[in-house]
Image 1 (cartoon, rainbow, N blue to C red):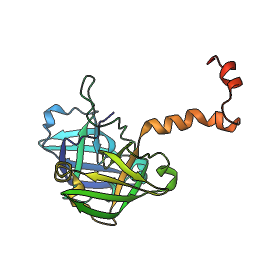
Image 2: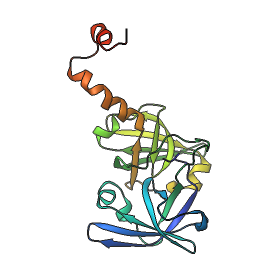
Image 3: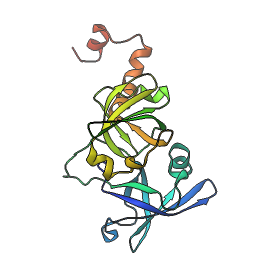
Image 4: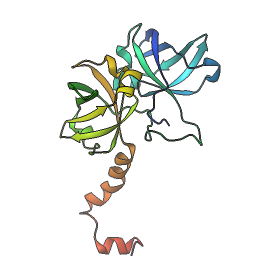
Length: 213
């Protein structure tokens, strides 16, 4: 589990394709002696497992699923990446609960600057947009952000100057793709309430039969 607070922006050293999978090596300022093989690290929001460390680099195996659902496969040598190690029990949860499991790729469609803040509008598939709510949370390339507004297939966020210069968001341009993870709570709520929807919805009788009244 992660918080969506980026620790460091690393640089891609290499990305090698291995059939439908890949091998990603990233240079980082995070002390590699504090990273153990098998650790989980979010790379642009995607949870990857450390398979090798050495010097100031960390290497990850990238599964076919990760390459299909994220922008990881489009990384090139020299590209910057947002990095965050998994949260430790007892750490402050400064952002929100982020699983590192990317739902979909979105695309920046508009960028405006107002009073030093960057207001970004992203489009995404409608089937994922339904999990976003105004003033709810969303992770964009692993960055915990608050949703300003949401429509059927788009949403906007406000980026303060500190977040803008401390992450890869300062490099993003209109048309660029990003990894999006919607709030996990909404997905669980939908999953748990689906049986009730199919049965015609909740009623006082159903609540009583199941011990809620």
